[in-house]
Image (cartoon, rainbow, N blue to C red):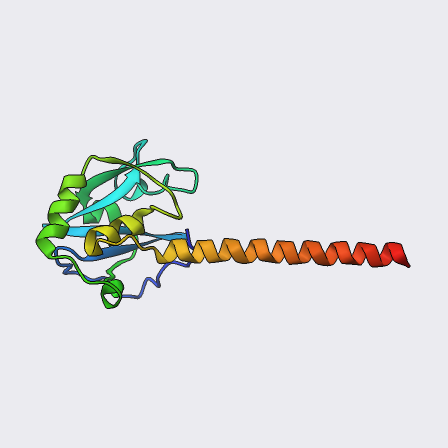
Length: 170
């Protein structure tokens, strides 16, 4: 997940999310995503091997293979972390009707799904509910970071090999 810093504590929390809104929760080192379904509840991905509330998302990592869809109180999922409504992808995708977002979210509660930090993480899950399209800014950032690191290692290795040849030649 993207290694972004937590939002400043001075930022104001959105107090009135609307059903169908994406909720972005700032954890240490990453953001957790959920869909607000109304009456103080969200639907989100958690580790399939347990945990509840704000601790339920901590086990979701690059090593996690299975996740379970849970319906929990927003306040329990957020804990003491900063959160906000984040529907920024509304500019990129058409928003599904709210009743479809909510019914699909509720239908998925209890399902165990394959989890992959790059192809199906909690942000992918939330955007697929809201837009019908899985999309993850965090996964893209991690993918590009990994590619850049790999390319850098290849270039550095080539430079070292060239330097060794030059030293051996002289």
